[in-house]
Length: 83
Image 1: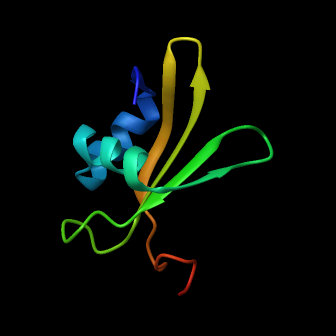
Image 2: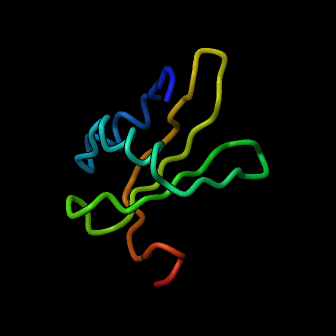
């Protein structure tokens, strides 16, 4: 992925949940992508054994690259939306 920019909120969530920049890059590279009605992009991917739940990344394309708005483990959900 080109230039990745992290919002202050995303940095705080990443620190809280122990998500690294490499984890975010992996989700962006391998995760399932969904474009939301407002134009934001939602990415979801199960990052091996490091996290019990899939990681969810929400971002948007900006002039300078891709802005990560938030990142967190999607607790109570399995890939495919099953509970």
